[in-house]
Image (cartoon, rainbow, N blue to C red; front, top):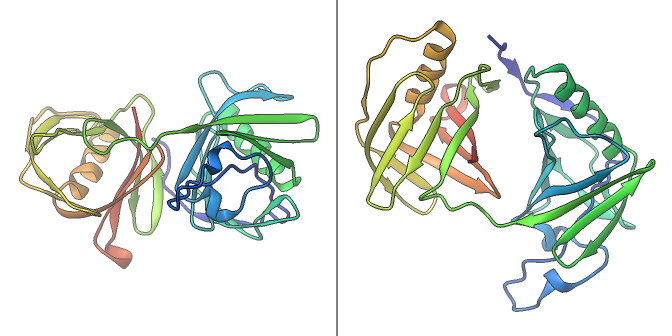
Amino acid sequence: MIPRTAIALLALAGLTVAACGSDDDGGGDAAESTGTPTAEDLSGRGFVSSDVTGYDLVDGSEITMNFLDDAASVNAGCNTMNGGYEITDGAFVAAQFAMTMMACDDPLMAQDTWLSEFLASSPSISLDGSTLSFSGDDVTITLDEIEPAALVGTTWTVTGTVANEAVSSVPMDSTASITIADDGTVAVNTGCNTGSGSIEVGGDTMTYGPIAITKMACPPEQTALETSVLAVVQGEVAYEIDGSNLSLRSGTGADEVGLELTAG
């Protein structure tokens, strides 16, 4: 079983990330602009890599970047870096980023290290329409904007569980998911058993009714994952969508539990 690990702070001085144009509610077509963006331009937008030169990504992996207000979240297939930033002289500068410390296959862990070091090297930024590019140290990463996933009708796959103010990865060969239908029902796969129930979705919360679940016995790792999932999908739960990522949280402080999920 992959161990539970706490979130650790990483100092990424001089962090530079490529950025993109604005989702301007005022009617301006910032997505068609070219140049250096502002944090306001990036807020609420997500990007996924379409091409990487100078480094071979692990097969089946990709780089995603999501921006909200003056914070950014970056993932290369294993751990997620996130934190506040500012754009100065064409550079995305973050004095301190947080990174989850989940254990993954060695190639993905090495890819995390490569990406954090690359971002710390202050790569240059360019924007062309909805395409985000940045380059430096003989590496160029090109990303295309992705539409935020719809909460309803999307199968959300669990990528991490939250408890005791720590994020834990999902055991290998285990898949847990949540799918909300437009008829007010929800289907839950706990990684062990499956079930369904009713759900009401509000502006930033969802309220689960009782979940009828199968009672199949599973190995300890899958049973632990099931316990984590069922601890969240009950009663009122806060949610937030960030691009293709969904966060669920229930409780507060040390009693908070939650799930991190991705579309698909």
